[in-house]
Image (cartoon, protein in one colour):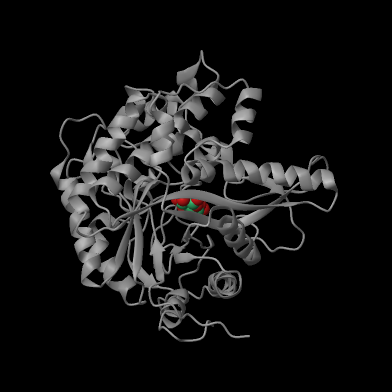
Length: 488
Ligand code: BG6
């Protein structure tokens, strides 16, 4: 059977996050962000996903003392800050009609609590969306993607402090007002669920700053503040710009039972409920009973204000955006079973699936299952805003990069998506490849974990010319996007 792209309203694109591509960490009034404190630490085993981005107060002090850029991967990114015009021009050649990017909060409010925004930061993003408009590329803007002003960590308790809701609202409303003529699609916060897996890089929580508190409580309370803040952004857009659509965004990892032992099936169902909890709140506008029960069992008491319930209800998302990279298995007793990992989630190895250079298991059918499950659960339009392969690429002497493994990964996932669109009765707004140029990995702070369609000459230590080279996958995507052509 052949599958064709038929819907011309479908958003085909690419996606990035400010802290992973921009660089320009202290330029034009930008403040220091939590991402500017992260560096590639070769001595840490990247398979130990929890340690890679762990952060304590000593490490933050070290980051504050060191004003250099080299060695601090997210301070230099791939210099998209200066190169955005040329990068967008090249990407437009593929035929994309959407580009998802995020705003660096600390470019707009350098300290997070400033009374006035930094105009240079706002203008930067205005120029960026104007540039996209030149090529008829629809922006999809994430307001916060693993980046917040460091001052909010040092002088508040990051997202644990309820004041963050109003700081975020002010930031969001300012950006939305400034860009409203150009941007219709918004995502308030990338993967709110990630706060559980990496509390610092997701939400600025440094465990040793909460010594007298139960850290799980801190995490859930912070997450609650994020839910309220995100819901207020939805309301702001709906009240002021009725044509805007605001989505929630969750990490989608497909979780299978290790085998048909009902105990393992039950375990998988429990883990999947944990995965759903975060989208349930943002789509249905209330905490699911099973999560409330879990919190009660863990003795976690959320402080809520009287308006929170109403805010969550009124601020439910218009669409469900998600990232999808891989799947894992799970078992009620993992003793003796081979362990594997997905997007910073540990699980049991699935013998039916190959794995990437970083050990993430490759599962295109998991994407189709995710589309079916999410649509059946919410009946809201879905949007795959991240899908891609982090791999080691070789730049040949003639400037070519033969990344057939990436083409294989992407085409198999896209094929499953198209099968789902044609056969499963789902609603899907679009699909974005994670990676325009290569960028700094969120989890390991490496550039050598490359996702891009365009190679950037840079190594994990920050050495290189930053020159760009189109990979084979670039030409493959271009061919795919010549509408009507068969999916290769
Ligand atoms: C997603 C994040 O979950 O995973 C991205 O939103 C991230 O920021 C992507 O880059 C891939 O993860 P990593 O750690 O390989 O960069």
